[in-house]
Length: 111
Length: 114
Image (cartoon, rainbow over all chains, first blue to last red; front, side):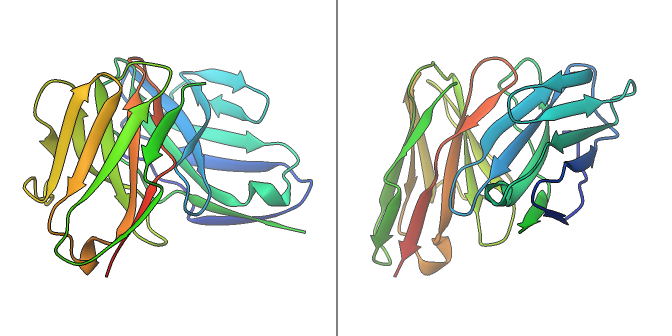
């Protein structure tokens, strides 16, 4: 299982762009990178997933360099409701494989 | 997107009793489901992998006789905490695999054992 490393916490002011980087040095060829958001007393919510280069959806962008040993989740113009824990996971593309949660990054958005 | 539900959302029980938690994939079939436990201010810890029609695979340190898992259909897995004790109080979360590379998580079940 690929191990991930993220900053434990980050602070940001409302309206700013937030970038959270995750390192996954031992990612395998068939692994995807997935980011989840978790609010207190709720299950993780899927945000975005990618394999390489850049992926963008309505809530975030995911940047993955060519070597795929790291990835960066970008949240544009954060609001107070984006205060949550963000987890980076490496997932085998064939499915059915367990994943290991790291510490996650606690993002605190400040008014 | 895919939806996973859990029932109940909260449960309080007396020490020594058993509690069953259901995990359902509502709009997709899930051959594999996963059960996690999360203590306050900590990350999710995988307890076991639930496979439809076969025995669950437990992580090291998780007692299989205490945490019974049944995955009788492609949309339902259950976790039964047997003879619950206060130290079993936690937030239990399930996830279901969509047969590709994405896991979808349930809303979680808060268990409090008195």
